[in-house]
Structure formats: structure tokens, C-alpha cells
Image 1 (tube, one colour):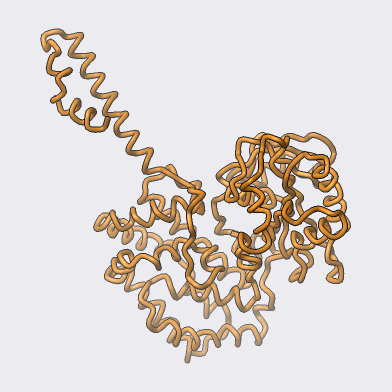
Image 2: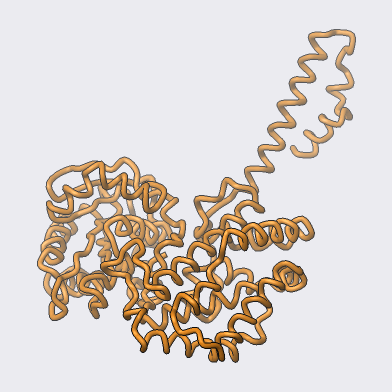
Length: 449
């Protein structure tokens, strides 16, 4: 088909040659047909370049799962010798690298003590972004095949950049880089400088950043980095290492906890999903959003038990083959209990729900991400997206989810609605369809990107 189109456009097709050139109408029709065929050919090629999530995609790993989940672009680059070689020879990027390494060495012995003086230089500025943006564009022009390879084989099919799939490869890469910049700056601001960011009640820095202990601790990391980063060849590594260390110091490993779910807490459910006859059920899954107790001595909140009771009743009626319990380590601050894990225990031990019918989503920290994260698992585990799912919760939360302000909050914080056709059925039931955009990672939520 492609060969025929090319031949036709070039004028070698006998159909074109047989047109009567003196016939204006025939010539005009032939010209229009050529334009249409060329447009079809162009759109076909363009469409193949705009592919997105592939359910068979296998993630790459760097050895640090928190870094992989927060900054997957960098993990992919680390697995590409061609891209690393391009970046290592670029004078602009290497200048930035040397400046950051010099700053690390400077802080080893200087008198800087405040976190602002020590860390601000590792944030990415607008000036940095302009220089790096142009450098990356130049490198892409120099070797588009190497860039296209990692974009088409990793960034697009991973789903992490699903909201960018309509962009060209070059623009998608730059957008992904922009998310890295936002994520790094967010972590430094929150866990280094102690700024109150999006969710200060549950995600804040663990220390008083003005206290002598924390300032001494931050000062100490520079001698450590001077040794571990001195052989770093990539310009973004120093700031990345700073961010990851700040999360470690604050004991913020939530993105990596309970992973890999596929071979751990959700293994039996995934095996069941592969054999499920979805048409036998009105809904694919029952989503149960968690609620954290205010007391550190309580493992599951009273409202969490009520929500599980309501969900178990509907599961036993055959409304859905799975219950998805969603919620991480949220309330109170630095709680040792995970909402999803505790709800699963309650469903099994108190309500008799079989383990293979329960999917845990142990990282969501808000009602917005209860929906987003549950849908991520549904998509990756092969649940049909053209069938309704059910959210079961207590009336207070149902009222909140059904309120238009909840949609506004999702659009503000996530940039989209992590569901479609949301419909309230009763005081405790709400139906919705999952959306593929839920796979997109969020640079403003480093504990649950």
C-alpha cells in the first residue's frame, strides 16, 4: 500500500499517466487525490510515531527503585550508551556538570551551614533549563535514531509519559526532562529547605531545617558526595544524588515500599485476573479508598472498617471479582501502618474475603490518587477499560467525591480527571470508567509519583 501511494504521488502510477491532461476537471480531481493520499500517508506515519502504553513493557532498573519511579527518564538514559556518550561530549552539559561537582567540593570545606546556602545551587533554574533545552535539541538533531530508540522502546510504552504521547519524540523527551526538573526542585524545596509544598500535613520534612542537627547532617552529605560522585560523567547526577539522599535522610521510601507488587502482595490476584470472565460481573472491581486513624496505636480507622464491610457485602453478591484497597502510610504523620495492607488483613481475617480477590494499592495519599493509582493497577493488570468499576465508601467521602469541587481538585493537582462518566448510585456507591491518562507520573508527588 505504501509503495503504491509513493508511486502514485511521484507520477509513475499508470492511473495518473492515463489522465487526460487537457481535461481541467480530471486534472483537478487527480491533483486533489494526490493531496489526499499524501495526507493519508503522512498521518499514517505520524500516528505510528505517537504510540503510548504497551501492557507487555518491562521496566528498566537502576538499583534504586525510588529514583526509578520518580525519575524514570534518567533510568532509561542510564541504559543507553549512545545517549550518555552524546551528553558526555556536549560542552554545555559538561560545563553544568563541572559546576555542580565544584560546588560539592566547595561545600566540603567552606563555612556554609544553612540549608539554603548548601542546597539552593543544586536546584535547576530557568537559565539552566533554557541552556539544557537547546543542548538536548542539538543532540537530538545530531543523532535522532538513538533518541527515538529509547523514546519508542521505553518512554512511550512505559506509560509514565502517557499525557505526552501525541507529541513528537523530540518534544516528548523535553517534556519528560521538564518533569525531572520539577521533581528535583520539589524534593530539594520540601526535604532540604523545609518549604511547605502540596501536602504539608503528611509529606513534610521530618526535621526542623533551622536546627543545628539538621544543618550539620546536610553539611555531612557533601563529603560523602565528593567521594561517590567524583567519577560521575552525566550532568544531572549531582542534583539527582542530592534529592535521593534528602529523601533517605527523611526516611521517605514510600514509592519503593511493597514493591514489586506483581510478585508480592498482588501475585495471587494477578493470576486470577488472567482467568477472569469479565462479562459475568456488572463491575470489574470495587475500589475502597482508605482512611488513616489519628492515633498511632490504631492500625485501621473505624471508617476504614466500615468501608471494607460495605465492599465485602457487594463482593459476596457478585458485583465484581476484585476488591482494590487503596491507601499508603498517611495519617498520622510517619505512621507505621499502611491503609491498604491493614484493610486487606481486615477483609481476609474478619470478613472471609479470599486473598486472590484483593488487590492492594499501598501508595495513594489522597482521594484523588486513590482513583488514579487503583486505575494504574487495573490497566497494568489487564482489566478491561470499557467496563465500569465501582467505588464503595462511607457517605462522608461519597459526598466529597460526588461534589464538583473534587473534579476541580483533580484538574488542578493532576491536570486531568482520573476517571470518566463518574456517577453516584447510592450513599455508598459510585461508578466510573478508568482512563489511560492515570498512568502518567506526577513530579509534584515524590512519595507517590
